[in-house]
Amino acid sequence: MSKKCLDAREEVSAVAFEMPAGACDAHAHVFGPYDAYPLTEDRSYTPREYLPRDFMRHLEQIGAERGVLVTGSASGLDNGSILNALSEYPDQLRGVIIPSADFTDAQLDDWTEMGVRGVRANLYQVDGRKVYRSGAGLEAVEALAPRLAERGWHLQVWIHAPDLAGLMPRLESLKLPLVIDHMGRMSTSRGVDDAGFQRLCGLLAEGRLWTKISGADRNTREGPPYSDVDPYAQAILRANSEQVVWGTDWPHINYYDAAHMPDDGVLANLLARWMPDPAMRKRVLIDNPARLYGFPAGAAAGTCPEVP
Image 1 (cartoon, rainbow, N blue to C red):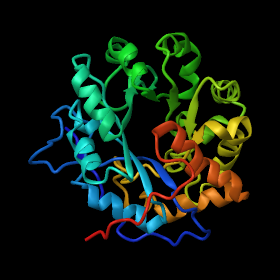
Image 2 (tube, one colour):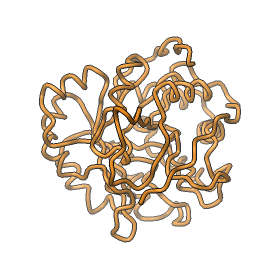
Image 3 (cartoon, helix red, strand yellow):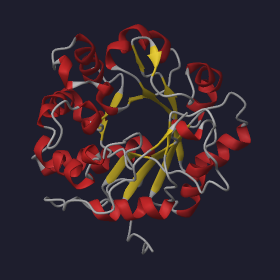
Image 4 (cartoon, helix red, strand yellow):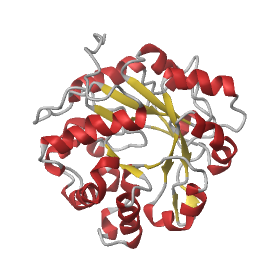
């Protein structure tokens, strides 16, 4: 039986630096409307509806203009909520969806035109057990890989960094650009010298994958202001800042204690601490997302529509 998640914060802390025009939150989720896109019965958590206009308000709060929406595991194999959001805000949003082996060429072409740029595989395990039910494994990606490559899509993987070593041969055999979620979901209790995390940094330095400096709230053992996550983000940026993107993970599903619900303003302010150089912030927030997700390079996304 899944638990009902707490709602995301309605108000967030002010962003204390100038977010560059066209900045991208490259990892977030929307859910619903449930009368059209219901959650899967086999799910690990139950969020309330978070609609495209809610996400646009979130972007406005943190001073970003673009976003990448990822199908959450609670949606199962139904990507409708993401596709609906892309249809509403085609200039500002891109999508990463859950793959199914029966996707047709016509669907892939239509979705590419809409702004889908990748598929996500859920490989995150603890002690050999999958943490989140539903989602897709690698089998569906393997069935689709040649057709995804033709359309310039990538594979985003929700995985624990220590598991990368054993899976890299299989992942690289797909011949798709590879993006690792949330810094490899590295608990700071393991230490920055952890072999799995060092492997992630090495692969990044070699240009063999991308990663997202997101998930500070999930990787921390100290809580806000997440100082214990600093060495991880900084090590990733030193390894190869040209293949790094950033996201908030809004609306922070699977939280049940209000005291731990992340503040997106606090998460955004980590960027100034991790990247005091504005040129590097521009690279991670604008230039890299433009290459990975196909946003127009070097230009702002335009004025955000007024969010009701």
